[in-house]
Image (cartoon, rainbow, N blue to C red; front, side, top):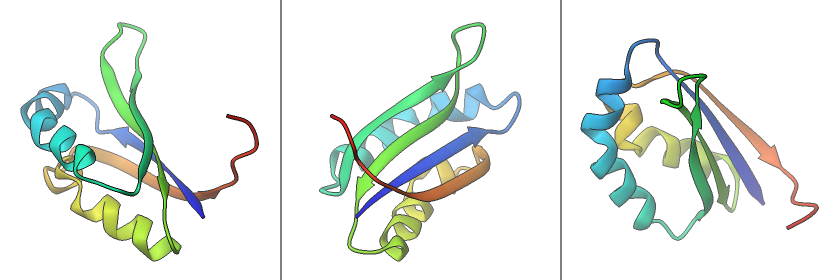
Length: 90
């Protein structure tokens, strides 16, 4: 099954994102569950959230993945939605 993680940064937390970006990217690169990932951008072109698509056995795996993300551990996110997602095209 696929899961989408839709993460919104806390306002004025770009510094937290940048300080933890290297650890976050290493975490993603070390995952065999990750299908696709990238940041959301605000009107100024600054990163302000994340979208990740995972292939997991069940939704508890997606929740565990999200909890171990260095961004989450650093308190970057205001909100994290984890939704089961159905791939149709691509």
